[in-house]
Length: 111
Image 1 (cartoon, rainbow, N blue to C red):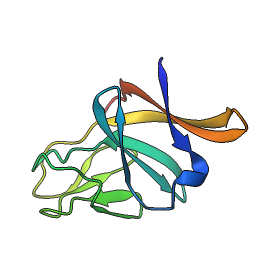
Image 2: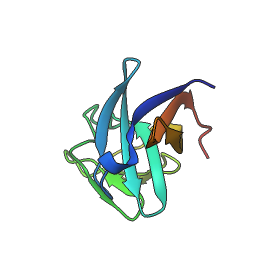
Image 3: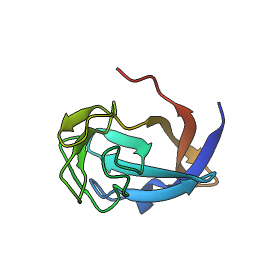
Image 4: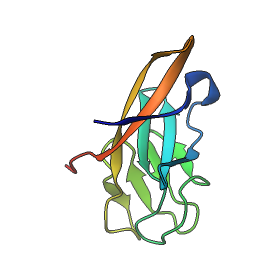
């Protein structure tokens, strides 16, 4: 599994989505009280970035039409979306005197 450094834990605020280009893929990284999550940064309904959306209780709401997705599983929680979004593995560890956040672009299995 190939891992890509996306930042230092100190650079992420709780429930503030951050859009990051990882090898040409738009990835949304979110730090919550439960940990870090990474999903595709594209709403499956409207094909817009989710980075401007709102994060609450482990879900992200698309800013355009209000579709909601579970950050852990990518599952659709609210219409108008009907297709889940991709989720990616995240790991946090020490790297060069920082606490690094890394993402793998291998897609996780959908539940």
